Length: 252
Length: 312
Image 1 (cartoon, rainbow over the protein chains, first blue to last red):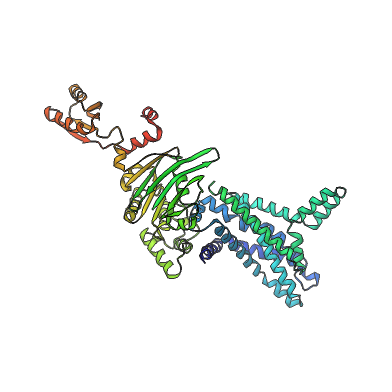
Image 2: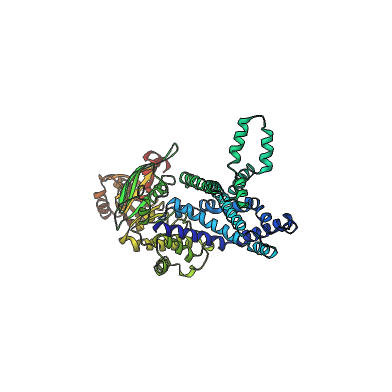
């Protein structure tokens, strides 16, 4: 109970601080416009003639690549720049509670953005009769993908007091995790490494760290335990690393 | 109330704090003095649980800050250096957040927030965003955050830094008001502040405690302690000779019509000088018994006797 009210208070404050500054509104507008534009114009949603959300979810890893690090960059960098981290961590909370509170607040914010894309669902139901299970799966997968990006952004935010550095490093890290398992890239690399089984093994290992295959499985409506284990373990690892970084560098 | 045992902190090869121990009881206001970089803030950050000590610990109302951190942190109100606060929140929202993290909810929370706002005299800005407030108000916002839960131990890192004289006066009054009910530690390098509010002072230099006593005791360590300052209408060679000849005087310095007599025997000097003045027709315009200056003691202890002479 005791640890709940601490974490709850932190979640509340963080969420409020998104909406009390223009960040939240800019983020939401850009996210919604970008996903709509990519789905309908670039993804040729109407021309596909299919009542599903493939064209919509296909873009999510790329949209998140820019937007999630932007939502995460201030989480710790700002606390360190302004010195409020000293205030926060001398309140009766543990570091884990503070990290969890901030993470859950930012994740909730991303969930709100995702929920606001509901018109695309309505459109699909209006045009045809899509598979509701696949749509639900798509949303949950997208939500977990956002959380995974967010955990990476949280780690880079803890490493610096400069939000711009946090943003750039986190975009690069996410891009790596994305491309490492993106079929066009992996196919190319596997072909290039044809002759060396050792290199191939390394490529496989790296690409298995990628978001992409797991996200695609879920998008197809395949609910396999390993995909969920993947997302949850990446998040847990990143939060744990954030804990380590903050413990060692919070005062610097 | 507050018990600090052998705190050490190393940052790589740098030893910022090397074995600081002291105790503060309820009703005491401890002034924590030292030059910049002496280890004041680092010590306070260890006591409040922000930095883990390399060795040693602090106990707050019996709770150890290294093993029982959350419970120990409940006992403290802390005003960090530069009074950080979330700039995008309003004063009321900020204090509500602090109250909620400290476990107050509903009506209890609002009462606490109102009381803290009242005590720090923030009513006029309670709905303003903290980022738009002046330095003095921001300091008070952070102060009200520290006293919101009426903690038994209050730790303040340079609470009057950067304030104007009126605001300093206000903050000191607030500290004095609470002094009897709490154990208070304030760090400062403003020495007048120590005399104004502290019942005891600790001087720290290079990470070690070099003096621990009441402001009066510390002043007694000054070489000016017990000195006498005599001002006359017409300075004469004879006055200098007579004063220097006193057995209780160590030496005499003359600056125009003003003589400063340094004591060899601080208890006797003043009586001896007054007697001389009575005997002769020197027309004194001023006669002052000097208690000693904290500033001199501070300089001597934190620079070492050799350097302090050179700098004088």
